Image 1 (tube, one colour):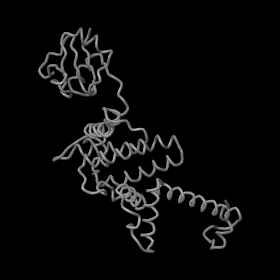
Image 2 (cartoon, rainbow, N blue to C red):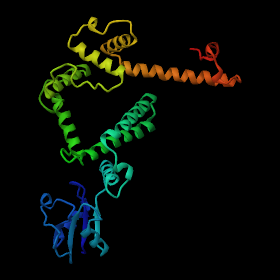
Image 3 (cartoon, one colour):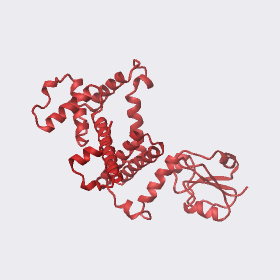
Image 4 (cartoon, rainbow, N blue to C red):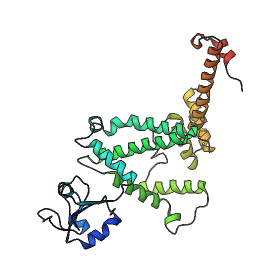
Length: 307
């Protein structure tokens, strides 16, 4: 046997390396892994001649690179795609990475999160599976990017592992009927009600509107407020009054959500159909030898697609 380098990521140990680890004269932990967690002596000051094995986090770690250059065998577990995505984000944000990525902040990234979210909504509404896969990846990038930026905060750092750990805790805690011995939930509506009750208890909310994202689109916001207030028994006659467009829009959106209709989604779908009708009318005008920009009211009516 000759020297070997075993590259690990997290707790992933290549199965093919087990016989080598068992038969090695000595096994050391490289500088880029936690020696204490692995129960191995650190490589610093160790004699790396002979049949030794070095457990490293990457091939480029100095001791690992030295052994590999000397002909050591390398055992490396396949990198799960999600782990690889985190590593790519780390590289982009590192000193030798991308200058643009390096200067981004939570605030500067907000616009991209909004844009990518709406592109994902388009893919869902269009039923485009290829676009759905791509846009889910773009939204995932935003999560990875924000987590990487958060990890650099000098006062309150956290990374993607803490984000995932918090999510797991939330999902398990809010599904006691699945992960504990709570009473079973048999309908989606019942589960939604229990979810809101558990959130209220967890966050010690003082108001039924606490936790409503006020920065969401106005129609969605009005719908959410209508839903929350409906669960608390707020009557419809307390909705904003008057003939002003804003008041009318609020009443329509809030009442629709109480009835189980998504006003934001419905309005967006209708708006997209209207946009298609506009395009169809423009094309019909061009086919008739008329430039669409010259159309007046009667012209638009003439070329407007029928039902």
